[in-house]
Length: 180
Image (cartoon, rainbow, N blue to C red; front, side, top):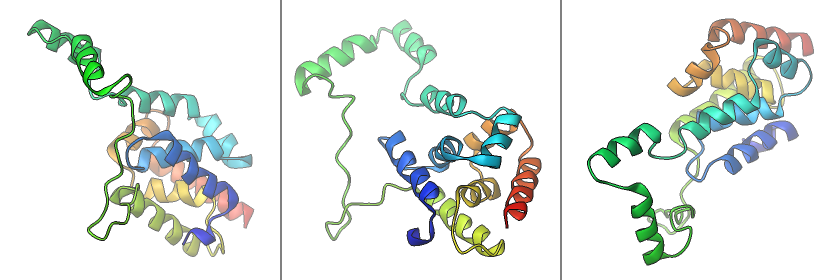
């Protein structure tokens, strides 16, 4: 399927890989789309107020397993996260908590995919969108349409803070039909 991706669409997937130490999910693909949108699609996203910095900020807010409120709650019952971190680093080495965990392997020794089932579904939906729109390639706009067709809760929240998903979908479809 990836042979049908345009250069920009491949950049979206590479960008999503670079954005996460875990598996690629819909929100990582969304960030990649926002970063690599060009021309009319970039203008549309900018017009409605969706920026890469905002999406990146939303993802960073969820990056750590514990936020400030959680750390304060643990501190109130006598658990000091800084002391836990120091203890772990003294045992396992400097930056032990920041290192990427080893990739798990399947029963056959092959590395497991770094794309979640929702991420895979989004890529498949992107292919379906390209076929529906009679495109021979999967572009960034098709990736966005795939995301909009089945967004997860995080992406829904990020988009709907600016524009209803159905309206954005209509506007992206209008752009792709103009380009055809």
